[in-house]
Amino acid sequence: MRELKGAIKIIAVFLVAAAVAQELARPSQERTWRGRLQFNVPYDFTIPTAERLREAYWNPNDDRIFTDRVLGAGWAVNLHALLRRLGALPQERNS
Image 1 (spheres, rainbow, N blue to C red):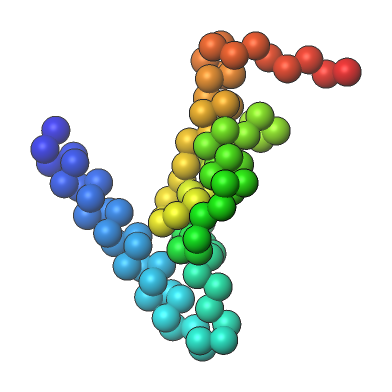
Image 2 (cartoon, helix red, strand yellow):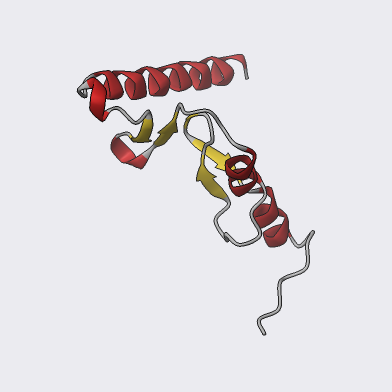
């Protein structure tokens, strides 16, 4: 288990470093600090807002379980979609 935690930390540091390097490779006026790395890994280093936090971690309008992370590199877990798929929340009815 200790090796797995160490590997996850190394991967996380690598992803953040790659995202920062990708942004620094752009001219300063073109830097957005948001984007995607190879293999479609999202990153975002802008200041999070309450709306973006809600959209990432509790979004009943999105069926995806894994959404773009609000701060950092990688994915967030849409708890609403996860709980709905696990049957802990009722399925929404179509009108």
